[in-house]
Image (tube, rainbow, N blue to C red; front, side):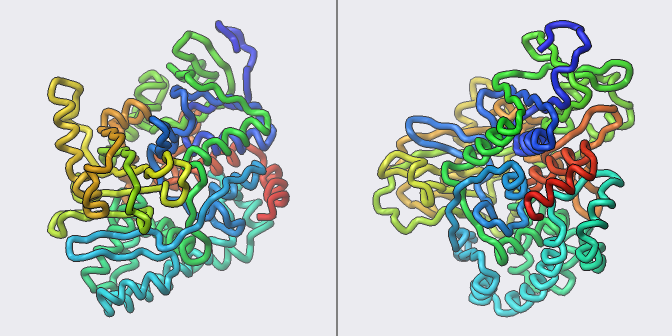
Length: 510
């Protein structure tokens, strides 16, 4: 690494941030033979998907729902990246997926489409009939998408030689569905009249994207239903950190380097193009390409100077709406008498309130149900979270009390599952939007951009600044682990020749 203004390049590509998007892009570029250096500000890699430990309890910090890790046929872009890197993540398949707890009763959520419809029919026979029609449309799109793996995608016209030479029949199969690709799920629901089913679909969409059916992209929900029906839902042994470790191993296996506790202070721009980065310790690392896994907002306002970007582009980024942040609970509890506990739960407190109202919809994951090694013997780990606006939060004298007040809906939700919860708690951690913002270095601790399908689209990896690319949930295809992994694929492929991608696709038989 250079300490001054020398012109020698330290790498072909520098990646800022070790979230799933950054790791995916960096590892895939290393697989292509590029010299890659990844800098991560935190001492733990993984971004929102990192794991951490306290007193023998091992917690996921963010995502808790995964699919296709143990299925080589899966459409999951993350699985495709792991295959390309020659890495694996052992995982445990399970069904039912979990339970949705409405005020009027509990709904079991099954992987298998037929069982899922049967559970809906117990509540609303009309809804089950309407759901079957909607599922057929979603699964038809999923089947059309199956023929074109995410590993083949890129964000420029060089995508066409790959698609035409290897996936022409699949392209024809996809043509009838092109209208659905940019549509919102609500656009497919004109004949869904049952109010309970509409509420259920809104909830399924919200859990995926942070938006309801009128803002969630159809391919995202088609992917969800398709993977449930045609692949497998599974949990990585070792938690989300096991996925991160596999990506880090893959990056290093193919010659990339990872520096933890290495905070990038600034992306360096000379003569109108990116030339590298400067770290907080003053060290300079040079490369002709920099990939930022920070959010669009943070990249523009914290990593670049105002004059480095066109005024119109910067203004467009800053006006992008953001989904709220979170309240988090990480608990260690005694497990005696909880032998029949399931791993995923969603609790809706009030049917008369919108599901996006902070505190009304609470997500709960108990991963030690599948992987007992995540907790000391005789104990469980719990991660529960709900939306919470960033505005108004500050670390003042009332911060501790406000934390407990705003976490109350999470405790009430958990008591729906474990009535004597408070008597079982042996470790309690409460996180706020400030926690989320601090540890993940995310703009206002946000879940991601509130870009509604049918009204706008997520941008690709390119920026107006030559040499600067973006990955993660600020870019196409959006929010969620499969989506951010796909963003890494799209960016990496865009930076190499189509022939290199075709060679890789043949090697991994995609």
